[in-house]
Structures are given as C-alpha cells and as structure tokens.
Length: 135
Image (cartoon, rainbow, N blue to C red; front, side, top):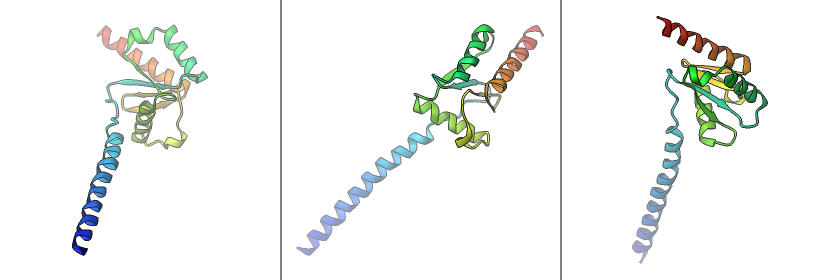
C-alpha cells in the first residue's frame, strides 16, 4: 500500500511540475516574441490622448510626412503589445524604461523622445529622402 501512495504522490507531483513548466514557460516565450523593429523602419510611438503627440500628429499632417517617408504609428497607452515593444526598443537604446514617454520615435536604430527631437529627426529623414531622389 505504501508503494502505491508513494507512486501516486510522485506521479501527481511530476504532472504538476510539467504543467507549471508549460504554463510559465509559454508566458516567458510570449515576452521574448516581441521584437525590435529593423533599423530601416521609422516607428512612431504615441499615446491616444497625449497633447504632445497630438502636436506631432498635427505637424505630420500639415507637412504631409506620410506621403514623403514611410512611418509606422503605434499607440502605446491602450495597446499592451505596443507598450512592451516600446520598452524593448528603449532598453535597446540604453534608456531607462521608467523615464521614457511619448511622443517617441525609433529611426535609424536610434531613439528620439519629445516633440522637438521627434520632429527634427523626421525632418532629417525627409531631407535625406529628397536628396537621394534628386541624385
């Protein structure tokens, strides 16, 4: 009888360990699936109700930025996956994720935070694009 109890407890413990590994292991894989965008892309991270982001968006509209360069926009306040990607990008740039905010631009493998820096980098991208078109 003792052998049956020991075997049952052992088998039950093994099943619990396997299930725990599957559950917690799959959660860790989800976090590692978030990838940093390629250096060639321009990714603009913003918050839906962020007033500074609205200023950048207004400037982009007035300057027809999306007709001149490709820029991907990702909302981070209501989209957890985008927020996690922003954190990963910021860490890759050597930034402390507790001190970053939006508007935030990832361009040429570098991070730009705040309205003036974001706009300046987009202006530079447009200039470079125009210069390359004229050659």
